[in-house]
Amino acid sequence: MNDQATDPTRTAIQSKILHGKRALVIGIANADSIAYGCARIFRQLGADLAVTYLNEKAKPYVEPLARELGASVFVPCDVAQGGQLEAVFEQIRGTWGSLDIALHSIAFAPKEELQGRLVDSSSEAFKVAMDISCHSFIRMARLAEPLMRDGGTLLAMSYHGANKVVPNYNLMGPVKAALESAVRYLAYELGDKHIRVHAVSPGPLKTRAASGLKDFDVLLSEAVDRAPIGELVDIEDVGLTAAYLTTPFARRLTGTTTYVDGGLSIMA
Ligand code: NAD
Image 1: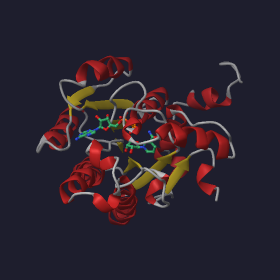
Image 2: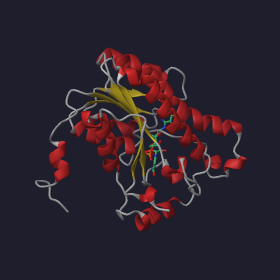
Image 3: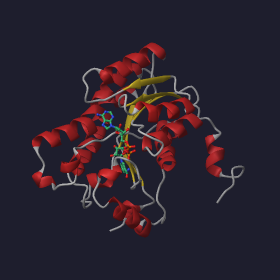
Image 4: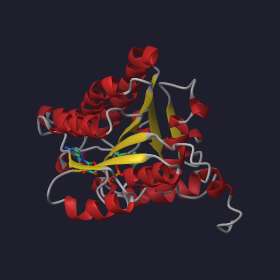
């Protein structure tokens, strides 16, 4: 283990490569959230943050984190409530007038159906999962476009179950497949404006959303046993990769799905 003074990751973070950048982060529920790991890294790299919370019930858990992150904007956002995502962008327009980074790190499916077979899924549950977990990213892109006048980066969180069958991922598999496809089409449509669009695909992480999956602990222990790097990823690992995708080091990359999984997805 590197100590603070010699850790090469810390040294890279001191570069403040995102200084002056403005980043919207949607999807912090608590300190375990992937979105929180991303927000922490964006902040450590110098970005100003806009942070959202789902509703009044979620607010007390997110507010201290937003304060610690020095968020300039802190507003509610339930993408299933008409007008709330629009209000977030209105607030950003009023406060900053522009935006460089927008991270979508949210997913939802009704629990009973998430834990059942895809073949038994109802049209209603599928629609809800698709709207919250995929189409809201498209809406986010549409609202971000006019604010990203100098280009920018849109990021969504996917999972390996989009491309391969992961037992118990069930209806979220096709929903994440649609999300990754949307990333490619948005990258195509927004490329001439230098708005780059990426999916980041983390290995399994113990979060609230993940606790809704059946036998999630099995996925976690398999990830340690099978991944070439032999350790679980953490939320800051995801944040570092997300941050890289927003920097000039990735300026000719768009439309990709980047795995942050210790190599798990290369294994047969
Ligand atoms: P999490 O529970 O911390 O985050 C999920 C977030 O989705 C919460 O902040 C929740 O408020 C938000 N959300 C749900 N419905 C919403 C709505 N209607 N409007 C706005 N926000 C809503 O869990 P997480 O694991 O950090 O999940 C973040 C993303 O990462 C999800 O897209 C998830 O599918 C993806 N992901 C998770 C894992 C994992 O193992 N945890 C692996 C790969 C990808």
